[in-house]
Length: 343
Image (cartoon, helix red, strand yellow):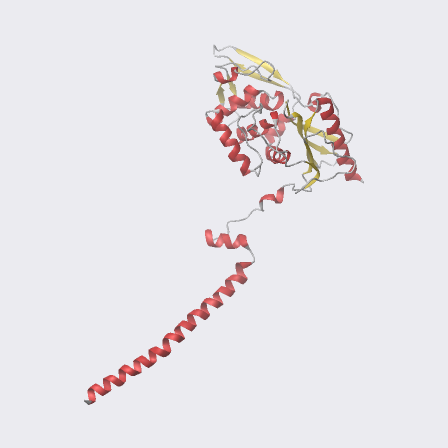
């Protein structure tokens, strides 16, 4: 074997020897680096799932708010209230302390129930969210299909009226025709509006509800829960325009007919506190709310009230046998809540 060949072979062996050493060392360095990096990342982000999600998804800290239920009153089961025994003839009832974020009383809050005209809270929420109060709405033929015993504000096909006036008719008198006019204005049809109602209800956390119309006339596929109504009403009262309307003791709607003639229609609240038919317990101011009545739903009402220290509450009773019993039980509930707070 020649000398040049022997030298070349020795150099090749040396290179192979170096490679056999360098490759494992390099792999070990990579593995150790990954392990150290993983430990650092876990310590830095592992205990914070929100931050982990932000880093993976956005590469920046975009989350600045609170978690969904932080601003809500939450209860998993029924909640007892001293001084207010469960009345099993009712479908559901609840008292929510908005300052403390607590459920002061809860009875069948998550049972599937028919909402009747408390449905109109969802209709109003969407009108405030997607409409302009000065919008001029042209009323379609759809408003003429209601029965004589179903509440309307005497809208006529071809009428023009502001969205604000429709909301006053909807929330105060509970006009079913106003609900249809609002739905068609916002979404083009009642069916499309019902789809919007369902998607927006879920966004509010009202996952036990399903709506098929904007007014609440009975349909087996149209239902909610007392807790869902609390969520929807709680969303509504964040809008001062809503609060202004439900606090009214009357309103005059202005309508323009298809022939250009103008007329007015006076509406008064259907809830007995706002209409002056009943007084709230001493120390409680009821601002207003929404009623609902059908044979299947019974008599229902949901209210916003404050005590003398201006602590806010939402109260709800569903399924009373008649209006006299409805307000008797509501006063009893409000009084029990006030008494418990001062003890």
